[in-house]
Amino acid sequence: MNQLILVDLLDREIGGAGKIEAHREGLLHRAFSVFICHDGQMLLQKRAYHKYHSGGLWTNACCSHPRQGEKLAAAVRERLRHELNIAPDTCRVTEIFDFVYFQKYGDHLFEYEYDHVFLADYGGALQANPDEIAAIRWVALEDLQADLLTRPQDYSAWFLIAAPKVLQFLMRAERPQAILG
Image (tube, helix red, strand yellow):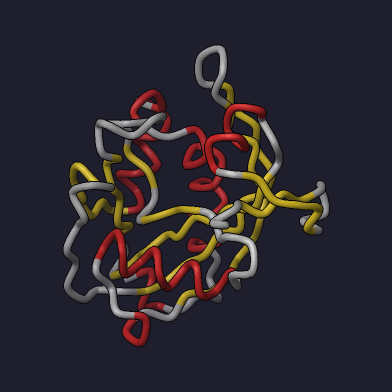
């Protein structure tokens, strides 16, 4: 089983495929990205170097794919636990937008994802899973903006699309001060 959820451009489920099949054939599938901010900083992870794509690049706190029959919210909670050891009841996440992106990695590997983006305010303990993450760091939002402009090659493709939208969301005056600091 353990199939990714294939979707159309409106995020309607149209089938399933194994993870490798979906990425080798460039099939549009459902994914999610979680951004964690606290006191004016964003948590970044450096993807483990052995990942089949984007290894060693900086990106958002965690990301993955829900499986067929799995609710998106449950998949998000499980991935936060798996990658950062964040207990589900200690971190409330809110979906803030979604987008579709396509990225080619070599001749036979593609990311074609309908990505749901979640945001959380969390300042508790973190324990990075070394199978997933090479390093984590907190970065001030202003410093992140500058780094994205001068060193985009250091970041994952989806992060370069989503991060400016997350930053724009955070910079709106009506957002909670706990996130902005």
